[in-house]
Amino acid sequence: MYPRIHNVSFDCHDTYALSGFWSAVLGADRRHADGTGWVVLADPEGNEFCVLRSAAERTRAASEETPQ
Image 1 (cartoon, helix red, strand yellow):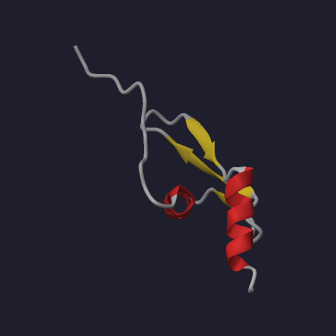
Image 2: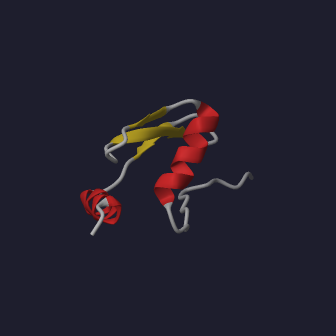
């Protein structure tokens, strides 16, 4: 019997930055400077999935970049 992975969870401060790191390694970065876009990653079996920022994360990032 072999163990099977059913779920993978990444618990980190900035998941978008983590996905950016892996996309740079894999060459599948489709992000834009305004925070839109996505990053294509793959699980160990080669199944691809996308990571993107939620609307709330894009809004928060935009407000942090705006000088006050």
